[in-house]
Amino acid sequence: MKRLQDGNPLGRAAANAGMSEPTARKYARSGLMPSARKAPRTWRTRLDPYEEVWPQIEGWLKLDGGLEAKTIWTALNERQPGRFSAGQLRTLQRRVHAWRTQSGPPKEVFFPQVHQPAEQGQSDFTDMRELEVTIAGEPFAHLLYHFVLTYSNWEWVAICPSESFESLSAGLQGALWKLGGVPEEHRTDNLSAATHELHESRGRDFTKRYQQLLGHYGLRGSRNFPGNAHENGDVESANGHLKSAIDQRLRLRASRDFPSKDSYAAFLEECVARRNATRAERFAEERGHLRPLPPRALPAYRELYARVSRNSVIRVGERRYMVPSRLIGRQLTVRVHADIVELEYRGAQVTVLERLIGAEREHIDYRHIIHSLVRKPGAFRRYAYREALYPTLEFRRAYDALVAEESARADFEYVRILHLAARDGERAVEAALAALRAEGLVPRYEAVREKVRGPRTGTGVPDVRIPPPDLSCYDRLLASHNTDAGVSP
Image 1 (cartoon, rainbow, N blue to C red):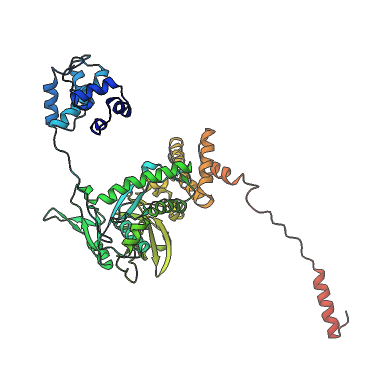
Image 2 (image 1 turned 30 degrees about the vertical axis):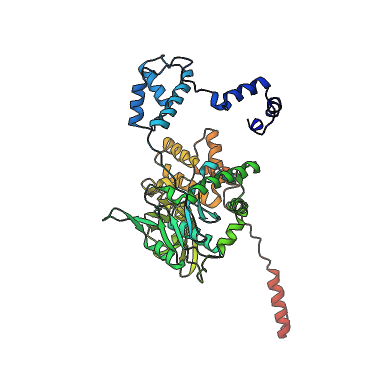
């Protein structure tokens, strides 16, 4: 049509348009474009199998717009078995899709935000278990603390065991010191590590410890409303992209196992560095607007005091930790970190324990008490923490076998086996117990000891042989004395 308007003959215009001359003449006479000549189809090519039941389907959709077409199809077949075939599911899906477009409920609208350099940083925790990372062959259940600058999308991560305040404090401070500056605002969702419930107004507010952390860095705190995680949208979106990127790097690596936690942390650092490299220009702009850091960081741990009870146990909050019995009666300084608990006495570190998280309430180490328990085996059966005195399933099987064979001496025999494990190594004793079970033998102490140390030699009493004394030395001594005194022999 344009060629014709420019004065070209019909044949030349048709050739330039790639069509035959008769076809070009048809369009020229009608004056309509090909798309305008095509009338929409208003008839069906086959009968609608859902025409009779559509009012019922529409009623369900109005009650709950989130119903899926497959759920509806299954419900229809339960009421009228065999009426609708599997091949008709796609027809129902198209009809439901068309209904939602024309008459369905309104969808949630997301509003893009305009961010300014160094205006806001956002924090969140994300669960990494779905990536199935292992450390030295053992599953590594962990979270990542994730920090994102909203203007440049620069990010930083840290491994943490739980959503505790110590994890939040260590993660946020690590990000700020890596940045080398401080943004104006820090935003989180309603983390229990940073907020607490207000009983009177039934709302939430920042905890005192979190407010102290914000005040130290001059940060303005903000949080999204409960149930509106999208208000923390930058970091929420970045969580998914980060996990996808880590998953892809793990696939390229062809292994999800790492020799140590440090090597896994180095791998994560490399992944994040690669992602940040694509944001270098905007980050350089944002970094120039950051406020300076304070002279020092705050300790990322909680410090308290606990006295060791007669049970050789200290209480830290609602959790209990067993410590060496030599500390009974002493007051210890307890430093609770995100992943460990440090114990000090008069400025000297006495032990470091793995911090209990989740449903774990007690950390009981039989090695700290077995020297006393082996002298009082009768205390074993009703001991409050008895279940913790089965280091592995093999030890529990051994005790059950002893009870079944000789219940009167079972506690005595088992406590001695546990004492042997504390002295000679738990794995060696476990292997001996497994070997005895495979042989169908009762795991008595002497049998286990022989497996671990080998058979005893002799009676156990050393053979001491004392040669007779040589008295001639006394004669020579006396003879030399008499000669010196001038006495004749």
